[in-house]
Image 1 (cartoon, rainbow, N blue to C red):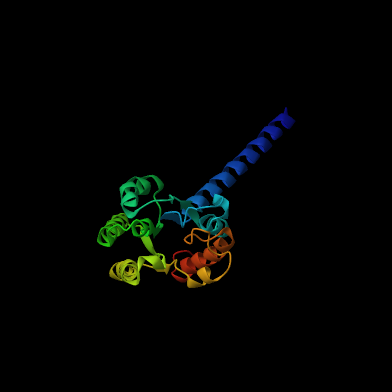
Image 2: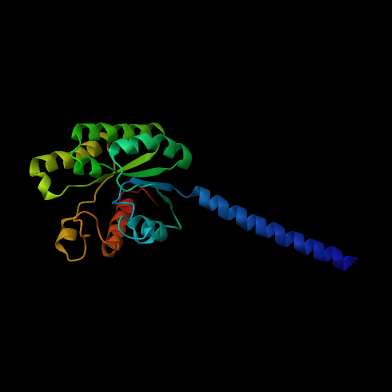
Length: 212
């Protein structure tokens, strides 16, 4: 009889310890800042497995300190992003958003002023919800001409300055000069380059105190 009671007490203690461990782990997960990557094919691992993309690599490297959700969609425009942002914020409730949109607006020759307006609305929406916004700058192929490209690229730096946003430029000339760094479409980094993009992003997040 005594042995049975001792076994019951031991079993109860083990259960309570397991519950405590699981609860502590769950609370630790909840305390992690939540980073949402909200972009297009540059962030959606276009042309490769998702696990090879920089967003997934960032999530792996920072798994102890940061929760990462990648809600990027290949082909997304700034207008499409604006349309789906409200429900995305409500469902995922991120603390930080890396906003990487506009490339497809430029590639399609859409109005830069409309793109700017869409990006600005998204920034304001996230600000209203007390979400930290990090803006990602991008560029276009040289065939679009310097006038259009300069105006396109200036949109990002001007918005970053206006709203005092952490800003990272995804355009890296060295990628286009190194063999096998860009896919055959001349636009998207290869799987080989994703690790370097990951390092750039991690350094950006750290240097701007967006993560501990």
